[in-house]
Amino acid sequence: MNNIKISGFSDEIASDFTTQLKTVKQLGMNYISLRAIDGKNISQFTVNTVKEQVIPKLQQWEIAVSSIGSPIGKIYIDDESAFQQQITILNELCEIAKILDCKYIRIFSFYIPKDENFDNYKIQVVNKLRQFAEIAKAHNIILLHENEKDIFGDIGRRCKTILDEVSSRHFKAIFDFANFVQCAENPQECYELLAPYVEYIHIKDAVYKDNVNVICGNGDGEIQSILKQFFKNGYSGFLTLEPHLVVFDSIKDLEIEHSTETIQNVAAKDGAEGYQIQYEALLAILKQLEQENV
Image (tube, rainbow, N blue to C red):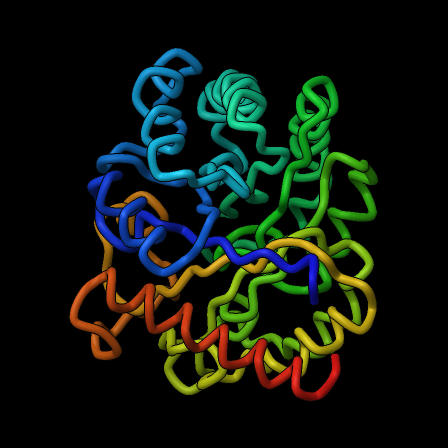
């Protein structure tokens, strides 16, 4: 586990970027996943505004960026205007990733109209993801597909389909335990299906009963046992905290009306405490695995 690095979506701590970085540093962490800065989504930034407003603060607090938590692909599959806008945004985000010395950009595989058969949209989804992957290839960036709820690649089987069909070194998988649980998937079965494609891991847990997000290790995500398998099979990379224990400002930009996201606001008094609780729970899991000589 020597090569494992812990990161996290620091906008769950607070909207204020300085507060995010200060809290992360106090916890002894050295990385963040960059999603929202002072209440503004990373997709609204340009290379110049990142140079002016973001990099100086990252350097001040000696924090690096593990991934860019973009909203790319979180549009409806049949919204051609939005897709063209995202082509432009993705090119800019690739340039931003390069100046941040970050090789990963998180993306999604499109919302499908409610009550439609998701499988009927495979060709359209794959074609558009291939266009995203070509952009990433041109910039030597790796796109990370998150198994998000309500999108085409929400379940293990469809995640594998798009990974196989896009078939690019610049298009890899994120493994998100809670999202699989909230889609009524078996995380162990998803691991067995997707392990060869996984480049990045989100630490988020949930329970089947009511889809509520819980402290990692306390839900149905089988986080400890699956991490053990990842490590034994040579995974070396980031574990990125995404607590979802407290409602945070940028959550409104992440979900659609019929989302299955469920945050109860009972595990912590605020975002900073929720982030710390999740971090300490992950450290406890890693310590247990270390004692097992994983």
